[in-house]
Image 1 (cartoon, helix red, strand yellow):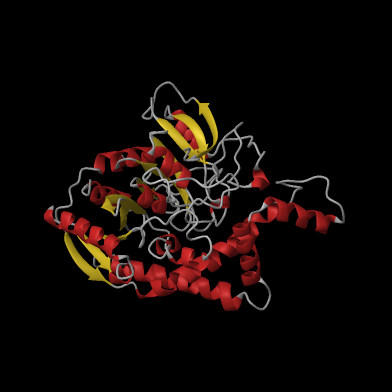
Image 2 (cartoon, helix red, strand yellow):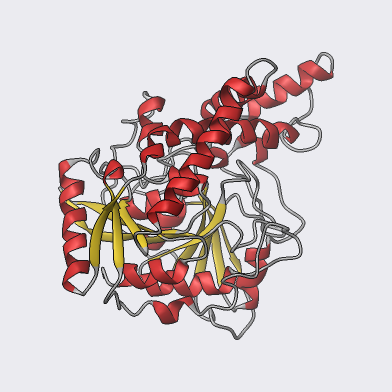
Length: 422
């Protein structure tokens, strides 16, 4: 049975030499590739072919990589299971009755199945770390500003980052070294962390490292997940790390704040898909308003329409202060709590996902429950911090991920600690 990991198979050759020569890379289908369609998993962009490469794709080519395809994803990155794609769901290579996680599920499945050596995903609220955890691969969500977002089709631009998925921490780190660094096309990128050889720090040396455990993000996990997480902590202690409990009280509000902000930004970013500037068009009757509405109702799936409507409502007159303003205030509290926690610890650790991979179709009927399983990952995006998900074994035959969170531009610490778990 096909995993449906790819939307478009292709072969884009890079330079003949470089750090990724002889390496195959799968690219999430919301990252622009010149001459190869970029659908975002949506009928709205089914035939869209970008005229340019995203900066990360240009850097892959210059590093000698061969791009082998554009991978399946939740439509416009909106989902936690890779089931909302207009091109059908992706299956988990570990157990095909289960989801691979989302929204970068196609990228993670391609790596786990051996269809690509490494892959690029994008992470708005956990969309690299979730599929990494559910498929037993490694995923890194970089600090906001370390990797250019030029050429990434925006969903929620203040939250999302492009990052690597691989079989090992070292391979993910090698890919991060290639794509990191400032870009004249993206004013949010920074010099910090640009010249670091991230693979070189994957040496497993955690002697003297202090790991903070935010109990708020551990207690809600399923027993089997928590058991594997505790075993991972013990592995790190045996290698010389020290653990302390830290408080992140504001994470109680993080999921609600995240969805208000993400949906509000989505309602703005997706406004250009109206059948005139971008998207399906033609043959509609009525005035321009009716034509726009027809294009959007035909082109967008149910989950995208739900988020656009909720985001538009949150930004509407009379409700902006009640919802969007309060969400931004909660985001500030989350950042402050992380700053305080990093005064006590070098890195923080949590289970990546509090649950095991659901069965296909199991979570779609209850979107609120699906949103809640992002609880351990969305605070990282609100605070624009780096995090890595590393496999820590299985429970009932399904993978469990261990998340390490670092301070801003602290990728070296989380890569070193993550490599100690392998």
